[in-house]
Length: 296
Image (tube, rainbow, N blue to C red; front, side, top):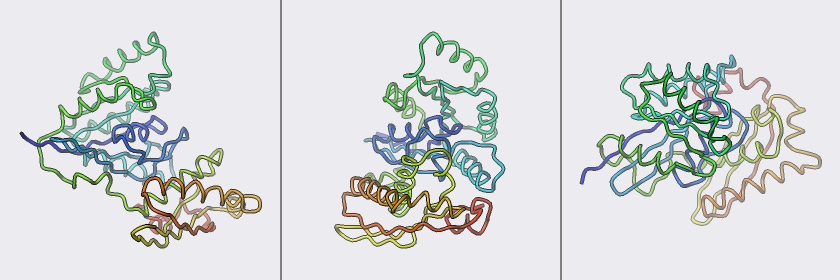
């Protein structure tokens, strides 16, 4: 029996549901999920193993035509993800199709030759069939070169099994690229920084969660526990005060939530030491972006 393996990019506009879909495809809560745009900052690799298939999914930041240096980093992440992939899953938010913006991104995918493009028409659990059918017809008419169009709901899992079967049918023949007990290439440090950022996104409104950067300064891994020392950078002193909260209430809540999430994920005791620091205009500074792991 032949073995099949390959890289599957998951791309789309901000808040299309890419990370929710990846978690469904992996059957594991790997990625931050939020209804706020630009939650995903780095391409995140997740691995799903079957008896004769290995699917290597790459979640990418939402495509955004912003002018900040950090926005340029996000776009480069998406472009590189497309280039690395054998198959591209293009996630479109069925409740807000934004055909013009999505067309520009589909054209970017087309510019990378010989890619299977599967369009996932997401969030159908929020649409009436009478509205969904004309939208699907318009997509098929506007993009006849799409390999497949799959209406689904990443939130409740509807048709995700159909999507998995389609991917299996299109993934190329190839060797096992990662050990079969491996589910991501990301380090515990990266995952912990994401869990902490996820907690702030949960508890903070508006854009404040998106002007903070989480940096793991030190990490130790023992048999039964993990220890992390983490700095959270913001741009202004007023933001620092908000992240700490009155009497330190918010930072204590964030620590509790992050530790619980990490303990469940890693199945180890978690020791977390975190500090809030001010670095003005970090999203515009190449040196700071590189310091926190962004390659501009």
